[in-house]
Image 1 (tube, rainbow, N blue to C red):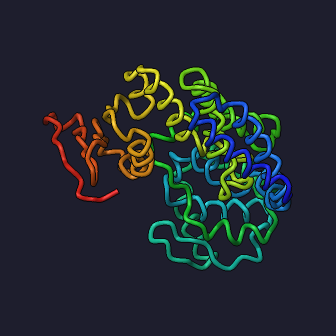
Image 2 (tube, rainbow, N blue to C red):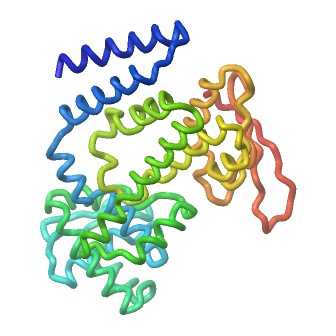
Image 3 (cartoon, helix red, strand yellow):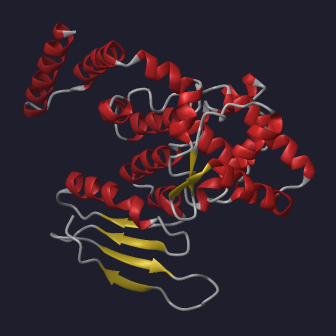
Amino acid sequence: MSILSVLSACAVVVRYLLIRKERKTWPVTMALAVMEVAVYFATMNQNMVKFLTKGPWCTFHYFMGSKYFDEMEYYRLYRFCVLADRETGTNRLESIKKVRHLENYTVMDINRAEEIAKQEKSKYFTPERWEEFKRDWIAVSMRAPIWGWKNILTDRGFNPPPFWNVLPGFVAQFIEIRHNQQFKIGRSFDFLFKLIAYILIAVFVGLDAALLSFMYVELAPYNTGHEIGTFFQFMFLSFLLAAMAFYRKGNNKTAGVLFDDGLTLSLGRENVGYRLSQFFRVYPSLIAQPARRPERIDMRYAHGFAVRWREPAAQGTAAHEVKTQEKV
């Protein structure tokens, strides 16, 4: 482990010297990527990876949340799981006393959660759809240990914006968790989208940039095992990476579509790398409200950025420009 760390540090120094001399750096970056992958797997918490690859935490929220979004929206996932657990006799939650109330994020008694779910079931579920939900609950409940559900059901629920749910929600309708092969295919889309993004970066920007993107995204310390077995959770990241590849190629229209339905991004000619990093920092907060979408983002300011917001179509008014006061 220590040898790999020292070699990785040496590779970083060599790469810096090659950049100074304007030499090709991708062979050194390739070697660095290989060593980083080795370090990543050597230091990875294997128990955590085993826990995550079964799909209990992220896949539970993103798969169940997207498949049954019409019935549960953002608020009813946990309490319907409690009801399904008791109706099916699965009893994975029998030792749990509290679950999160997703309307106000307080913690409520699990029996109260069951009572609310009983009152709401006929309002939101058809009998056929409820039977399907129970089958999925039986399958997903076995993917986490009993102690794991205590933490999962006091989390903050399913929370991607509604526009994210269009593709995952459609795909999820064709998958039942009990059919393990279907489920494995569904969990492979995140990796597939990112792989396509890395290939686009390699073609349009260069192999060196693709390798650096791979190391930054896949090998980050916070990401240990986190992206293994997820269900479309990082689709937005793949779109951002692909959009930047098209942007560097000069295909601004395609980049805009990938960013956000025709978004225009202005970076100027100076400090492009810094401005781009600042854009990635603020972009998620700018698209957090589906009813208010950015049309143009100007990052050329020294101490901030400007946004032109797209007005809702129903209002029929012209877009107005708002210059943010936040320093980024």
